[in-house]
Length: 267
Image 1 (cartoon, rainbow, N blue to C red):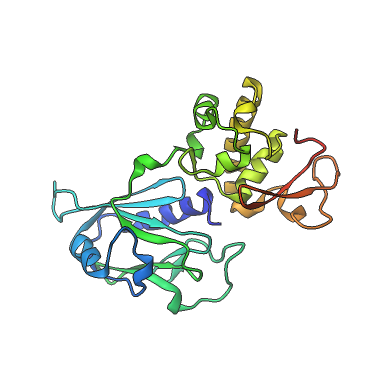
Image 2: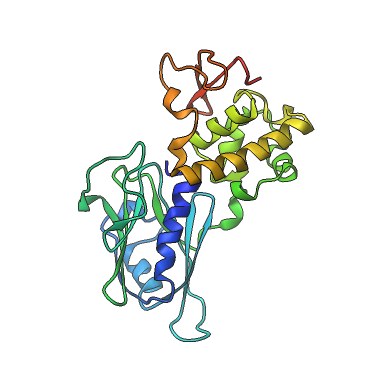
């Protein structure tokens, strides 16, 4: 967390400031600025710019900036990554009141970026664990296909000839952008595929089922309110049972991530 679903909520909130001028910027945590960026160069890049558009690729939020005025030249794009506990707030209003594995506390000391906007508004990144980051002109080409645009053909290209575990490949943002731990476990559970399968070992039918399961999972959980609302979620614990067939769930480490899955129907 946050995963694609949550960052899409952030995008919708940030889209409210399109057309506003960035009056100033605060970035009190130098470590949070990535790629050699510092607060002076960040301020030079964004202060006085107009927010032209807000986009999302996977879990990366992109704020496109232009010079003020009609037809103004482009400024650098601001890239915002939220890690596991980052949230976005506009004038104190959060896109999400809380994250499943985040803190319930509200601490201004956790504010890593603050954009002052025309009209007195403020767009704030709040991240307790400091696992996110801010960059300029992030390399969008390093990201794979957005999970919402995944098809069987694009999935085949993403999996390639890799012998890595299927779950690890799906969570590799260079291959499929936007899937985190919860969405991946839920999609594999729905598709009936073991997270430990070699990524390149799927049949044509299995790839089609998985691509469909990813899209279905994202759509359903978006409607429910977040990546933490999957059918599997309440059973992700010792003694948990598969919601489909009642079999005992298995806890494994796959790709360095805690993984819950059903060995009875995920083959």
